[in-house]
Amino acid sequence: MLNIGVIGYGFIGKVHVQHYISNENVGKVIIADPLEVNRKSAEKIGFKTYESFEDMLNSEKLDAVSICTPHYTHRDITLRVMDFKIPILLEKPVATSREEIRELIEKGERLNIKVMVAHSLRFSDTFRLAKRLIEDKEIGNVLFIIGKYLAFKDYNQYPKWKTTKKEAWGGTLFRDGIHIVDAIVWFSGKRITSVKGLPLNLLFDTEVEDTFLGTINFQDGSIAQLSMSSITKGFEQIGLEVYGTKGSIKVNNDELILYKEDDTPKYIKPAIGASDFWKNQIDHFVDCVINNKEPLVTLREAEKTMEAIFMLYESAEGL
Image 1 (cartoon, rainbow, N blue to C red):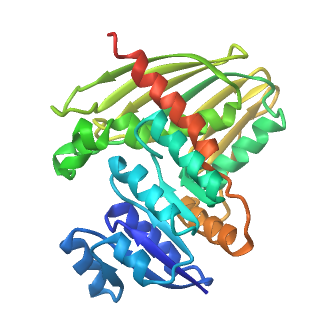
Image 2: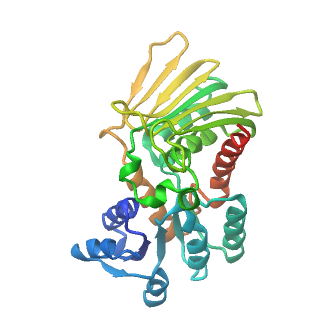
Image 3: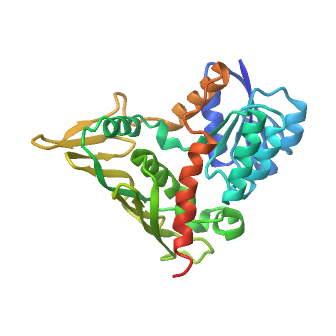
C-alpha cells in the first residue's frame, strides 16, 4: 500500500486526494499546505497535515507526491521533491519558462526520477479513442483542427494569485486552454512551424487575459484554430473538432462523433457516461509507481505543449 503526499489542498489538491483514497493500492494520504484554512479543512475529515511540505517529506515515509500548488511555485517545489527521489505527479502547467522546464527535465533525468504531468484530457476515454481513430487514419490525413475551451470563470471569485502576472503568469490560455492546446499537439503529432495569438480582456480588468484566440500551423500544412474564454456565460464548450481528408471527429469528455465519407455520423459514448479523466489519471500514476512504468505524459512530452503555449504568448507581444 502506497503512502502519498499531496502538496497543496486547494481545488485540484482535493481532486487528487479524492481519487487517491478511492484507489485500493493507496493506504495513506498526507497533506501539506501553508494555509491554515486548508489544513483545517483536511484535518476535519481525518487527514494528517503539515504547514511545510519539506517537514512532511522529512517526517513521513512517502512513496510518491502530488504537487498541486500555484503555477509560480512548481519549479522550486518539484526540484526540492526530486532530492527525495520519489515519483512526482505535477499539475499543469509544468512551469513558467522554458528555462525552468529544462531545469526540471535535466535534474529528473539525472536522478532518474519518475515525473508525470497532469494533462488530464489524455486520460479521457473519448479523447483516447479519438486519438486512436486519428492514428488509424479513420478520417484520412488531418487538415484542420478547431479547439475550444469556453466556460465562464468568475475572476472576481478567484484567489488573487490566479489573476496576477507574476504568480499565475497567464490567464485563460495558461490555466484552462492549455488542456485544449495539449490535446491539439497530441492529436497532431506534427512539428509546429508558426503561431499567432491574441490575448484579450473583454470582461475582467486583471493582469492576465480572460480570452485568447489563436492559430497554430504545423509542418505538414495542417492548421489549428483556438478559442479560449472565461467570459462565456450560458454555454460551455470544451473539446475539439478534427477535419481530415476522409471524414471528421468531434470530441468532448461526454461523447465522440465520427463522420466518414458516404456514412452517417456515428455517436460513440462511454459505457457509463462521462469519463472521469481525473480518476483515470490518478489510477495511471499509481500503477506507474507500483509497477515502475513510464507515465504517459512525461516532462519531455509536456514540454511540447508548453512550447506551443510560450510561442502563442510571444506572438502577441508585438501587437
